[in-house]
View 1 (tube, one colour):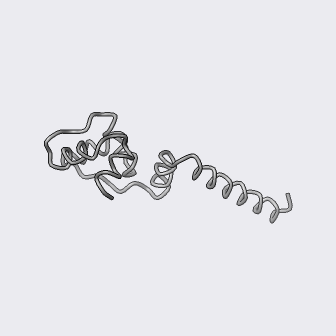
View 2 (tube, rainbow, N blue to C red):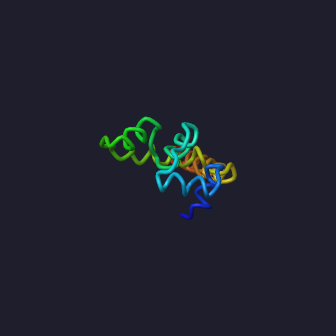
View 3 (cartoon, helix red, strand yellow):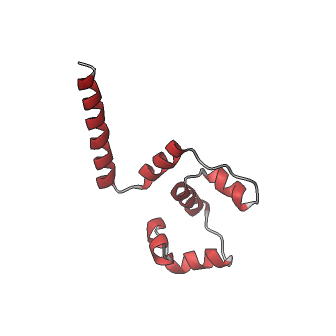
Length: 96
């Protein structure tokens, strides 16, 4: 992903992302939280990682939930519809 695209996701400039990557500046807490969510981690886990502490991989469900939190609502609606369809099919198969 380009610096421009990543910056757009976070609502910052590509220059800000470039400065972070070079270590010239550090993202503020709000942007660190956004980066953590995008990466599938909590803010605390990301801060621990930045301090050199080992970080375990987030569970698959947590990765999915974190992605949903930052998805455009149009995509969330598609997921909601798929989930509703799945429940409906399951209920029908059980004779409910």
